[in-house]
Length: 508
Image (cartoon, rainbow, N blue to C red):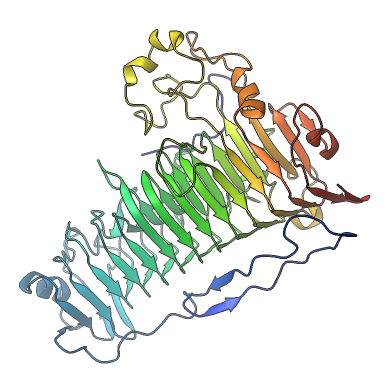
């Protein structure tokens, strides 16, 4: 599923909330545009401070005994839909077959007493499966299940309408949690799972109306999948696939091995706000082959020190960044809360570089170079017209491409202290670029056409930002780096109304 398709050309190419203190902000003389302090992001310290479940069984609830192996699955099977189950304190287990799991019925509710744990004993693959709608799991720890790669432990079959609240899902293989339409994941701890904290993927269908709010998403990808399967793009805190409408707010996404949040292929209408995203090995946010998003009021710091540093050490000159948009942009023809990708009122502090907008000239529908995304996505309805030789006669910027377009980056604060990041070069960049198109030989996107389009013709714009530190700007292609003055001048004309302070004082 999916891929970690980055810049390569072809063939060479809580629920206790603690207010986060404002990031240190230097003042400039006189008025200046942009934010002057960090957003008042709250830290979702869910893992250390979990909310306790009910100490007594609610009226009418079925009590589940941890001393009886398989009691939860058996009582679920024998009870009618819309039953509430109360799990007593203690460690609950399933039977010994690896496929033994709980199969809820529609509307079932599972409540954990203080200290209630469902333990897979590194034997069972799945905890909760099946296709029943509107299942609720609260105040329960689910741990030590061994789902295969790309599969999940809770809501294994991506049923719709599930609510996961005040849960701890930890120390599992695969994904701790899958997702279905209208799923709500709130105030939960998704910790130290082998692949993802959550894999928002539904086979042969998309997901609508996903809410991920107030969770702590930490330490995931313990199995180090990018090392085991290089460039698989199959790791991190949360991965989203074909999600139409997602609210991702108030989460603490930190210390994941890989990206913090990654929307990969055919996502649309995301609101990503008020999150604290920090100390992830990879980018804080990747938005790839997707459309229409608002990214606002997030605090993003110390991300991508591991992955980007490693790539730089290997001699890769690509501007890896902490917010990475790849073949993604605003699309007015798709219904969403915005027709742009708007990134504003965020504070990015001491990450490996800032924001990179990228579009691979050789990556388009039915191109042999596009092995990573499989079929053609949302806007490409007639895939035959994107094949050789039909595309050669089509308009150059047709729907056969995923375009990085209509990206509006404004009123953000970008802070960089290279002594904190412990770098000297290649960690100080903003970028908007493509590669020189070369493949296949029948492609109409060869040469600099896509680079010229993403740089000057697709309405990608920085303005009214504040820069503190020695920032540089990569434009058109990876070989072209300019300073702030040239970045603002003809032909790029970026960052109107922005301010820049390196060692020499403020520039306007």
